[in-house]
Every structure is written in C-alpha cells, then in structure tokens.
Length: 86
Length: 407
Length: 116
Image (tube, rainbow over the protein chains, first blue to last red):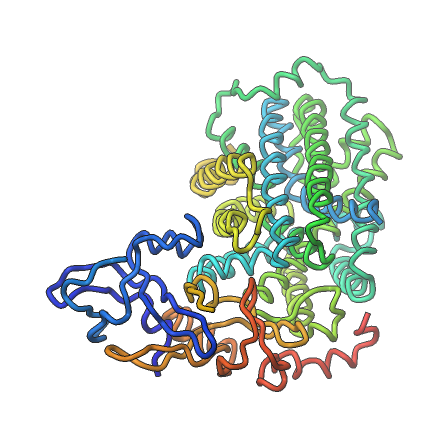
C-alpha cells in the first residue's frame, strides 16, 4: 500500500540525474471525490512553505507535476528528463 | 466574570512565574550579586508576556494549544523528540514543586517530611479531582498573593534605592563573569518556564476563548506575568538587602522565608510560608496538568479538566500516573531546591522546540485569519527567539562550568 | 470547486474531530492509490500507534510498541471538512476511533465524583 509517509522524504531527480532536492510534501486537488495528487513539493523552498512561512495562497515555484513521475525505486522518485519546477 | 478570568492569568503567573525555580534563582541571584541582575528579570518578564500572549491568541482563534502546534509544524518525528524532552523536564519540575510543597507543610506543621509528601500528593489529587478549573485558579491564585509580603519586606529592609536602580541597567561588576552568566541563564530560564505556557494556552482552550477574549488574553499576560515579575524583583531585592549583607546562602525554602521574617517578624514569616505554599502548590498543579495536556494534544486524545474525568479518561489517567511518578521521585529523598536548578536549566535547553512552532502558527493566516502577528509581536517574537536560542545553547555549558551555580 | 492544498501542511498531523466535535486521534498518515503514469489519489486516513512505525524510524517503532499499536483506516468519503482540524462526518465509535478512551471510561467512572 502506498502511503504519504512512504513518498515524502525521497530524493526527487530526473532520469539523467538532475536533482530537485527531497520531496517535502504532496500537493493535491480537492474536489468532489478523493483528493488527487497533482504535484510533489520539493527542495528548500518547499521546506519553508511546509512550515507555513511565505504566504500560503501564492504557490511558489517549488513543485514538480505528478505526471512527470516515471518510476519510484529504492529511495528515489524519478521524473522525466526536461521536467521543470513550477 | 472578568475578574475571575484575570485569575487564570494570575494562577499561571503566580503558580508558574513564582514557583520554586523563581524563588530559588531570584533570591540566590540577590544573595550572590546583590541588585546587579534586576535587569534580567525585566527581560524575562517581557519575554514571557510576548510568548504567552501569542499562545493565548492562538488558543483563542484556532482552539489549539502548544503541543497541537508542535506536532503540526515539526511533524511526528521531531515533534516526538520535543514531547519526550518536554515531559522529562516537566516531571523534574513537578518533583521539585511537590518537594517544595512538602517542605512548606513541614515548616508549618513540624510533621515528618516523608508523610507530608504523601499527604501533599493525595491533597493535590483530591483538589484536582473535585474542584472545577476556575475554582482551582482562584484558590491558588489568590493564596499565592500572600507572596506580596516579600514586596513589603523589600521596602522594610530599606535598601539603598539608587543601588537598586542601577541594577536595572545591564552591567557586570564582578570577579566571576561565568557565574554571572549562569545566573542570567537561570533567571531567564526560570522566567520563561515552558510549562507555564503549556498550561496557559491549554487553559485558554479550556475556557473556550474566542476573538472577543483577545483583550482578556493581553490583560492576563501583562497583569499576571507582570505581577509575577514584580514579585521576582522583590525577591531579588530581599536577597540582595538581607542575604548578601549577612552572607547567607538561601539553600532552603525556610531560609527564603526568613527574608520576610527578619524585617516583619512572625507575621511576615507566616505569610511568606503560606504564600510559598500556595504558589508552589499552584505550580505543581500547573505542571501536572501540563504533562497531561502535552501528551493528549500530541496524540489527539480528548483532553481538558472541563471535560470531567469521564469525558477524557486517558487524559485523567495520564495526570494520575505523572503524580504517582513524581511522588516516587520525591520519596527518593532528592533535594527539591537542588533539583530545581537542574529543572530550570534543562527547561531552558528544551524551550526553542516549543517556542518555534507557536511563532510559526501565530504567523499563519490560514490559522489566525486577520489575527496574525502584527509588526510589534513579530519584532519582539524574533528578538526573543534569538534570546531563547542563545540561552538554550549556553545553559548546559554554564551549568557545568559553574558546577551547578557554586562558582 | 477545485482547491489545492499541501497534504503534509494541512492534513497530516492534524486533529481528527468526529461529527459530535469529539477529539479522536490525529491524522497519522494517508493511504494513496495509484502510481507513476497514472492518477494518484488519497483514498483514506490512517490513524493509530501502528502507523507511527513508518513515520519516525526507530523512535517511531518504540512509540508504536508502547502505544500497543492498532491502526484505523478512515475512508476519505467520511471526511466532512478540513479547516484547522479534520472533521469527520460520522461518530468516533462508528469509525472505530476513540477506542482507548472508551475502554478506560468504565474504570474511571467507578471512582466517586468522576463526572465533576
């Protein structure tokens, strides 16, 4: 079973090794049904936001879209080459 | 109603601010350095006012107390470490306070110490079990006001007031700067004791404060802790006027009470002991509840004195267990006054972990809406964050270097 | 009506309140369904000492042992609202929460004046 805690903390990097820092949080869209995860919040900026500093409404450039994830292995989350933080 | 609500602040202040830690450190500081450390008390008072006002505001707007915030902002892992350290320090403090209660009862009754420990424990348990939250506040808050006898004593001892005035200006005239620094840390640690804040913030939630109580929160914080600060200053002045001059080391609570007897006679002694008894008992209850509040808040259990015992069974069992553990610890014969020094120093070390989450929450608009920290609260909040971190880092080294304040 | 929230900041480690405003635990973890290349959705809240194992390494396992680990799974459909707390649409008993308190209550109640 996948859990939130099993994803958060993993290093996020592209297939060719470009790193984005660690996954600090998961951003999800709330709607009618279950929340859908739309992005991984990464890196240092993501950490500050995690503590609630720096305006909760403005989402800074600190997230990698979930569609970019190609696989999860070892203690990494691997995303497609060319992914940008948004 | 309002007057009684001021009692919450007074209890937290008298019970927390003038507890055994403050009695020991303030009188000792006076006995060692005269009036030179009065300025530290002022810094400590402003600090605790800033910290508790924030906690009270968080409690009023979000219905959350300190350890809810600790868990939410630090996460489970770091939060758990904060919890464990808080609980260990809390238990040390509780042990010292209960020991202090037993000492006071012994001074009043002459009965053997060990029996009085048990009597004190049972009395506390019964009072907490049967008495409502607001009556607990009133009894111990107003009883603790007997400590005002020390203010009278301070004046009666006729100090050189210009020297007292100099004490409010930071400065050091001593051959022993390390010991001076130790007392600075100790006085700040005694003023900024964490359990007062746990109790105050949880009390705000217990009393179901809302936005309309923010003024009350400010008044409680300022009047309650201000009064506590005033008493601490009085204790230090008595220390400097009487003990320093006579070369007495106030190692015992009884010696501290002498501070009121010398200028005011038997009535002074009686009021001092009664005041200490109520203040230290109130502190014991605050500390006891804080231990239960922290655990319940961290784990999400139902909590609160207002829920009655059956409404919050695990919370109730927690404080009963803590009381038994503390009684056991006092029974081992540990000296409450000595234990207090360690408790105060270790509280200071653990303080940043519980201060930082509150500062973060107080700035979070999704929590606090329009009641987030304003510029003044944040300026002071950040200054004190720096103070707290410096104190936390310096505490243990100074404890070791001065051999627990022996110089 | 689509809102984005950061789960760790706004949901995980928050207080659970049941439909009667009773405190009944914390959100200790979230159960997810899906994976790379497909949608990832949050399907349930996990709560209980057993869930702590995954959160804090060795200390978490110790805490789980002390707490005599149980775990409760609350399907997301039972979440009514998320504000500073996570509010559920059912009573704690119906969801299997608050068990610790329920078990101790009869013993506490035997002591006189336990409902003061």
